[in-house]
Image (cartoon, rainbow, N blue to C red; front, top):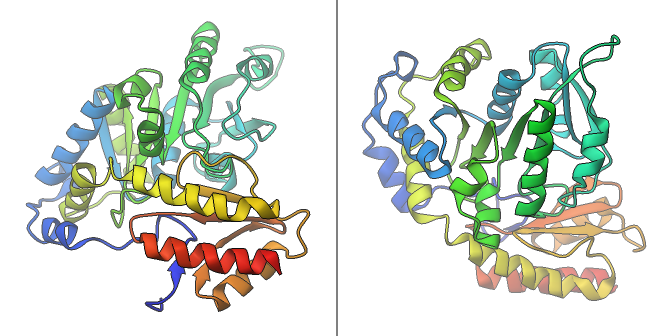
Length: 343
């Protein structure tokens, strides 16, 4: 990637900081399949404690962490409810069906603006040859929902709905750190609402690899078997867990800087009628339905100006701020995008 390019495609494009590289280089390691990597064990214990869960399991990707969690709460041939834009059914290439034999049904895509009554009305009980609902999944923050934060009151109501119907509640918490910083909800308060969670270290926090599955000790013991079955058993992986621990110590509170930078980009593009929704965290969603440029044309023109953006659909694009985007880069990107949108 050229040094002069400003990469706003995703918060996964960050590179380890010098301090993170030092932590990786000096990490104590062991064979994690044998449960002998002390750095992995320390990371798992720390993340579980932060969210108030009994245990956690390190996984190489957020998709694997989500799919392990879903298999913990939905038996084969039974049903998961989630929204139509959820990562677990949009960007995980059918893994719930392919690996878990899980049937999925979705409510209309509304990002973080979930109506618990709508979800409750979709639940199917056992009997009458209908596929029974076993779990509800939500995404915090919501990627295709423009980085929206699901309100705590909504999550509590979904917990009530799940309890009333005997269902599990899963959180795809890939960017839950952003929600925590934006709304100041304690991580343990989020954790108390969910039976299972996945949390990511490479989105926003700047680690090169890794997510964790959270749940009860019994669930996480089973999760180890599922991870191995899916090819996720790892050996001296403490060098990666060390990056995650460094990220937790140094990169959580600084997410507020990314939110401020995203707000500046949103302010720059808003006059051109392309801002899809208010910006709460580090994602700036663009709706180009009424603009002469479509998403691919804008992305190509922006690249020529030294700015990389994501194309999510024919008329949908996205800007994401992160650890490697400086204030000066935000100014340059804003100038380039306003020039293109004005034309």
